Length: 555
Image (cartoon, rainbow, N blue to C red; front, side):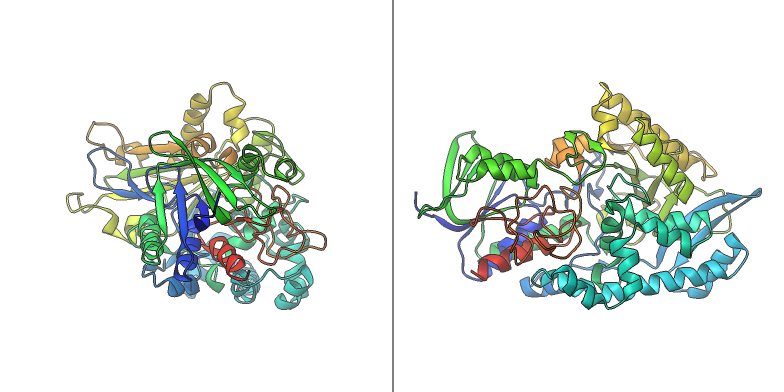
């Protein structure tokens, strides 16, 4: 078979769109194959509720890691709106109720909120010192994510701060939090960034929590998480338009079933089922895989190419620790996603804060340090956490363009993201739907505990008269998007450096080569990762797509 295309990209998620945009603009012939009937992957906007014109960011919902450089290079125009309120965390202590409000635009207001919680000045001073350190790391590390992958020593020299390096890259995050902060609520607020979609705890020796935390505080060189105006679909829509303008071709409704890496003068081949279910094959000089590494291993095995067995064997390994849903150390997500539409924002027990401020940032529920540890221990023992930690966010407070003109002015979207809910709790139960309902009941009960009225009284109803609420467990994400075990990062995140004898820390599960220049290379010379499972992957960033394109163009 001849190479009909220079590059075939498996999967039309945002990273695949970024790669297609760069490669098409460089003059290469590019084909994107997408299983679903549309592109965008997890970064899409959809009308989740019949009869209601509300376009929700159904899966991913905020943007931090997408470099402006990528948008500029591809000529993409999207608006990412800064949130004034960083977070709000309700608390109850000694018969008093209140809320820790972090106002990014008003340091005095934030300091007063810390003082009300802790009774002194020390905790806010520690907060400023800690996030001053992470901010310096962010400014130094973030620009490196779209450059060739540095070695560990090179990145350490770039950070140029021995204390920051030790606390973020070498020692469990819990040690730093317990040394720097005294308050249980403050410690918990900080730790949450290390637990997003990741089943772990503050003192995990594998440093899963550190890797997750790092990517949540370095985005854009600031760590800010911004609102995509128009929803996530506006971002991927603009990326797809740029890729098409560059000449990339798209086939949707086409499921890839095999990848033959080629070799010895043969091009790579990709087998796929077209929209009519007919199996077809297409040749290419390179194949970029936007699917998870374990999925790539399966496709390589089905392709029967040289080295497929080795790639599959490597991909089936994991980073040491807990046993996941697909076997020991298999990729595993640990979250519950709930999308809602409300007739009004609920009143809070804390009457001192404006509900628009509380819901405008990240609203933490049952996420004190002790509660997060207790939730981890319960889930590790096979029980649903109680109270169930979660965080919520209201997109429509910052951007009402996602709501149609017929939606009443007081209505709002609400997104809830539950933590410490690993896929094993659902898969191992024999009744995943029952566990999903129980998990939903748990997170809503914790939320109701900080409200002055039941959330149910504020829910809108759809055209069929049902409450506007949609729930997605890790198993649902696996079924919807082929995320292994519902892992939103495709696998454990990796530190953004190259280890001696390998690529990145925590990179097991990827068929990488030791000399990988961009962190996307695999054991097959013509096959690259361009999705979240690459080193420096995870989140809506486009970085793996950019880096895979640079790897191809550099050859």
